[in-house]
Image (cartoon, rainbow over all chains, first blue to last red):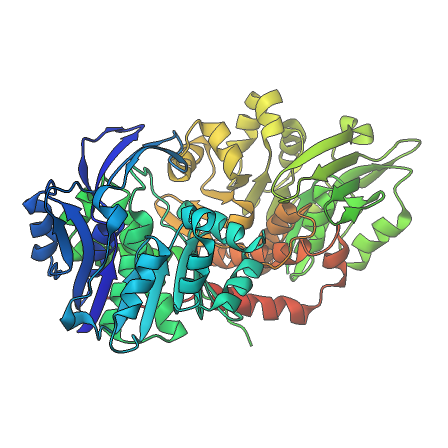
Amino acid sequence: MGKLLIVGSCAFDEIESPFGKTGKILGGAGTFISLAASRYDVDAAVISVVGEDFPQGYLDLLTDNGINIEGIEVVKGGKTFFWKGRYHNDLNSRDTLITELNTLGDFNPKVPEDYKDAEVVVLGNLHPLVQSSVLDQMNKKPKLVVLDTMNFWMDSALDDLKDIIARVDVITINDEEARQLTGEYSLVVAAKKIHEMGPKFVVIKKGEHGALLFEGEDIFFAPALPLEEVFDPTGAGDTFAGGFSGYIASTGDTSFENMKRAIIHGSNLASFCVEKFGTERMQDLTEKEITKRLQRFKKLTQFDIELN
Amino acid sequence: MGKLLIVGSCAFDEIESPFGKTGKILGGAGTFISLAASRYDVDAAVISVVGEDFPQGYLDLLTDNGINIEGIEVVKGGKTFFWKGRYHNDLNSRDTLITELNTLGDFNPKVPEDYKDAEVVVLGNLHPLVQSSVLDQMNKKPKLVVLDTMNFWMDSALDDLKDIIARVDVITINDEEARQLTGEYSLVVAAKKIHEMGPKFVVIKKGEHGALLFEGEDIFFAPALPLEEVFDPTGAGDTFAGGFSGYIASTGDTSFENMKRAIIHGSNLASFCVEKFGTERMQDLTEKEITKRLQRFKKLTQFDIELN
């Protein structure tokens, strides 16, 4: 059972989509990463910060899934990070309507003593300095550090972002962000440039068009599962990162072959996440459904061409 | 050796892209389909129409690749179909600058006697009535009829298009066109609706994002090979269709498993086509390069997850 440390927001989300509106519901990168990773044989802890308004039931959900929440600080009198967004008709783009940082604005992550030697660390999307501060607190070099980030930090904290990118083994980033970060349109060339910035493994997420894994000259591609209906894409990228990291932590194997499996596991869980609002689908998901859909991924992608 | 009949334009193209401009060069769906299909063990013939201005060298190129050109009518005093386009910087979209139908406007295809019993027929992008007329001339029901079409015919000849769609086994169509044809955003739902229109197999081409093959509930996905540089996308879709059909004709096997292989073969050839202007890369392509890149497709997509 591998030790996995996650840092990321636990938050309120409010979502408007062509399928309806939610009230304030559970969201946040830390939440989605944790719920996905907990599907694997891992000893996982999440570091985050919330306000007094964060329901005990949300914390219990994490605990019930075996996540250590010692590192979630509850700020007295504080309010929890809140994001409200509206998806366009094709669900591929969205507008942010409200962002209230609240307690997340002064987040000072504290790594629980028991997890300072975690083998795998996932740095969910946060200010790069917050991500760095987590790595600074480790008392043993992790086997694998996975970084997720977004264009917001490229615009507002590029130097800090480059510093943390230089310290990680895997970066997950979406296609437009990879292009913005490198100034290169070709994702193959963009991945090369990101390799040069530090990470041995570069994962480029293309949403409904799948994900690419690069390690030097080696490339692996995992499609997104073609779905009849995508309901709510919120948290899909975090669920992908959580499934990826949870699988790596549970196997303890960071070879390219195993990374490929991890990418498929992450894509598999993400394909469920989008089927309902927020974390709903991840909560009612059974092991049997997970295995059955992995079969579909195999059928979708595996072929048999004999070559000499 | 399977008998393969192809109908499609032989044309002059003139291309402007961020990489430069061509003069008038060899183009046309019939040309690209033929050059790709000729890579397989097939007895192929192409039906088309050109003007007296069409260089003998272009006809020789087809003959040299083993294509029967008996069915290419050369119209005395006529001019060959001409298309000029300009690609945008990302090469994913283009503007048509000039379309001169010329002899293609009165194209009345005549199937050579020897090919009226072809096992595989490829109906390249043309007016649906021209495509229908080819099928009408067959004296034996082909084992497989493959149709390629485009949005232009949805706008201008929808009823005729629906008639020919009802008569074919495989349709290849791009994602936006599948959405336009069915009014469905989800490609899974769109494919279902297209199945209901007739074709047993639906191939949805997503350009740089790969291609999906649907047969009822079965789905297969082939990515496009991630390339450092796409030079000129002209003819990639036709090359895909030609590789697909050539492989099927050479194997004589229309099972879903073999269709999957055919999709990979088509994607493989298309990945070469875009590396140079027009047909240039398809002309200098060696067998060794083709096999080597098929290996890359395997590495790109194949993984090993044990499931019970």
